[in-house]
Length: 104
Image (cartoon, rainbow, N blue to C red; front, side, top):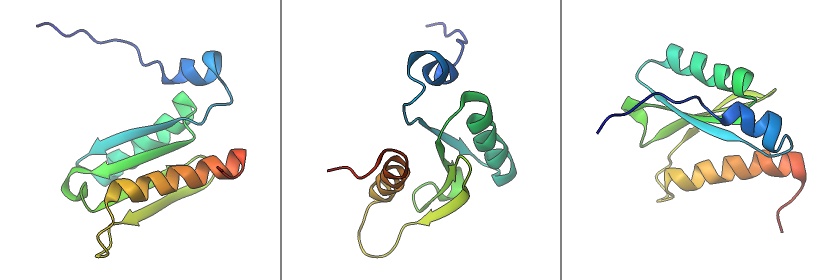
């Protein structure tokens, strides 16, 4: 199997296909400085509304949620049995509702 690099379509999705869509991307890195640079770069370059960013070392217990025009927020897994994925969905829902109104 041969893999070839292809252009990212995230920017095209926001600029050409549907500018009003809420777009969220994901980043995984081993260095927090690189992670922040890439997350903020995705917001700027591809017009992402939010980026769910993980450090490889803490990927199962914490995410850093970067939001366009709102900075970053750390989301930690608690001991209440809730899955990290559920916390991520809640954060994306919060961004969505802030932009489009409550989900019924």
